[in-house]
Length: 302
Figure 1 (cartoon, rainbow, N blue to C red):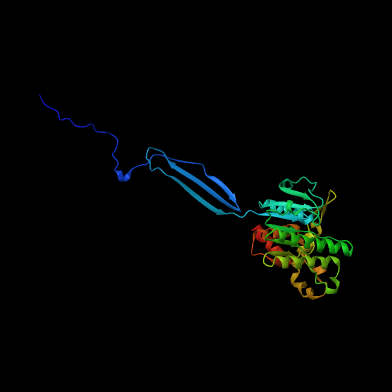
Figure 2 (figure 1 turned 180 degrees about the horizontal axis):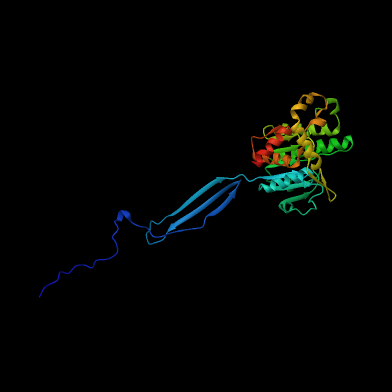
């Protein structure tokens, strides 16, 4: 009878050299997001399962610098201020408005995305407004008798600038006014002296991050007591006419007070976008003329 050689059973499982040892499946924990001082931290841990004692837990930390902007708009419910709030919201910037009237009454969707604080810069509790802000934008200004104009155009803004500086706000943007080439002795009114006093305070306290915008006539749809005044019906044609004839009228610009008639109007949207450019661009600071305001606005539109 034939005999059979007894052989060990052969496994159908492939033999894997120890140098190519396959670890057991890796289970990864969900990433955890942390936010601290404008920086996001992403932590993700993975751990091996199995019976080996040398199983390890590996943590991967990803750090990204993300600058989250939060601006405070003084006079945010006004004509220029509301345009700035609206533009900021459209760019994903967090906005707080401080004005005596507080929240506006019109039902635009962007209004719900702004924090509205009713108050006066001379009496407000700045802790409720400035903490956490990255920039303050002041649209404060107005007309009246000499003392009133000095107070609202000058003193109110000086108070705001010093409060912002005290709270460590890194940037201050002030909406001033074009000088219209008016002789200096005519710039002694409370309106202009107040504006220039505020400008001086901004540039003194914020020499490398303060922004002063000097627009001329600002046009757009202005709401007053529930009515909409279409200033663009005047501003748009005037701006187009002056643009088309600038080569002919340029020699006249040297005449005293000529800019009362020759300074081009500025869209309220251009002023608002120039402000947004200032908020986002740390290299944008100093005094900006009408043409420079329009150029800054185009950068944001691009």
